[in-house]
Amino acid sequence: MAKEITPRSEDYSQWYLDIVQKARLADNSPVRGCMVIKPHGFGLWEKMRDQLDFMFKETGHVNAYFPLFIPKSFLSKEAAHVEGFAKECAVVTHYRLKNDPNGGGVVVDPEAKLEEELIVRPTSETIIWDTYRDWIQSYRDLPLLINQWANVVRWEMRTRPFLRTAEFLWQEGHTAHATAEEAVEETLKILDVYARFAEEWMAMPVIKGIKTPNERFAGADETYCIEALMQDGKALQAGTSHFLGQNFAKAFDVQFLNKENQQEYVWATSWGVSTRLIGGLIMTHSDDDGLVLPPRLAPIQVVIVPIPKPSEELTVVANKIAADLKAKGIRVKIDNDDQNRPGFKFAEYEMIGIPVRLGLGQRDIAAGQIEVARRDTKEKANAPLDTIADYVENLLEEIQQNLFNRAKAYRDEHITRVDTWDEFVKTLEEKGGFISAHWDGTTETEEEVKTLTKATIRCIPVDAPEEDGKCVLSGKPSKRRVLFAKAY
Figure 1: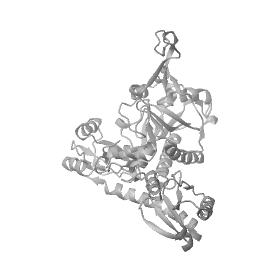
Figure 2: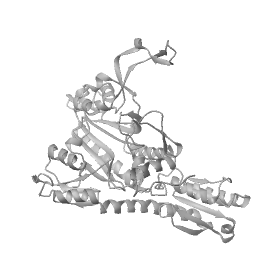
Figure 3: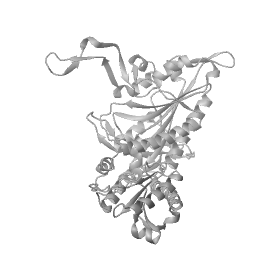
């Protein structure tokens, strides 16, 4: 397996693409802007999906599924929503092919034109709220807490595997509530779920915040987000939770009879994370030797490599270690390949990011020990064979915490407070990261900063204190700092 990866310091974008390809996460597909997620990459997504699904159900949500196709007229019912997604929509216009009479394969049958075009799902608010009109009649039907695991299509012009693709996998929650207070509470509850998942499972520190009106989800009254910082100093929006107010309920006439026997429009939320999280995971932890995975999400947490070649005694001991690890719920693989040398195997497992590697040879058995290599620091140590399962269990937690601490230290070192425009520009060019600065609250200033520097307001941190100051660009009064950054 070729190990060469473009160094991060040389070309960060190519480094990222090299890891996606050489760590066997995804391939390019024949369809422009789409990717083939390979088993190792999909195994990572499955771990993310399963944990998030557990967390959603733990907070009272249930799963459902809604159609991939959305009638074009549905998107016309909520003006801000259609404006926000119109340029990204893939449209189905015909329903049949026929043989080309000139022998050119198949062609679209011009007589099979749809009466109404169908939009390939860019997000599901419209078709879900059309359905909710039939599901919700009374306050007894509320709250309605629905999640969907699905794929969506947004016709992106510039794509990059996992970070931005024309088709991607995600979950989207869509909930209905009797009061605005309940809907806002739901929005913030999910924001906390996302933040907890990012930090406790992905080992990726995040900042919870509110988007500016200019960055708000199309059709929402308020958008909350979690923002993470990648190793190149750029931010990544890792998840969003939207308070939709009554906008979609009014657009699709979803009313309920309240406890006072009066008709009222319901209050709504929507929220989602996607396979973009895999891109965030790569860029938060990986290095110039390949992928680095937090143990809680690694499809394989431990690999046992018999050295130099599998033998009966080595196999018996390796199987015993694997059984002890599995009894603790640890995901383990025994490498029984006798075609490749140990050095090749070590490089391969380092490349694909397996957190712990156990090297077992005849001498190790005789000495009652085993070599343990950890992926995060590349350190090696010898551990007693008779207590190896306990040792590895503790080591996996240590690696998980170390990855979080390392990422958090980097993030914290790259939050810079500035008060002048010169400081802003210098910090952005020389250091990167989040810039904490005052903003006058106007879209005009926000857009001018973006035009001048390509930096955007990532969020207004939810815990940002009131603080009198002057806008870093316009000099106008400001009540709190926001976080600017260049972003993916």
